[in-house]
Length: 186
Image (cartoon, rainbow, N blue to C red):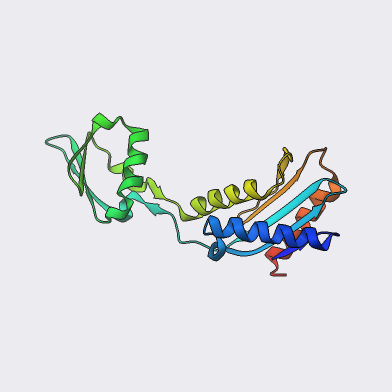
């Protein structure tokens, strides 16, 4: 972790704030590196965070077995991994009404019609979940009042420039430098 600031004490304070927020949100093990630039004279805050790789997204068909009963015109779904059931139900309730999803027991769902296409429905995306949690941390870290924010994030790096003035090109360049350094392991 690197916090750049001409005021050494200010850099230390921000480092403590960042560590505390990461600890509160249990993000320490999910982040490879972090770089921040703070300049109170120029009211700017640049933050770049490299996320660790996560497991792949989980499709509905990876955690359940689907059977279409043509005679009854019902798709029966047997849940293999109960850990995903809350996510599965949440996703299905967005697609169908709760009344359309019959759950005769804990491990079985039934939906009227042929819904074999649901096998490809993503029920859990660890990368997206981590990204959402890191954005939560970013908005807790940013100084209050810095409402002008430019998101420069890439696939595995969350990078933002925040200020209460117009964003300068030099600040965007600083964010791109951080992104390049994090991509190259510097």
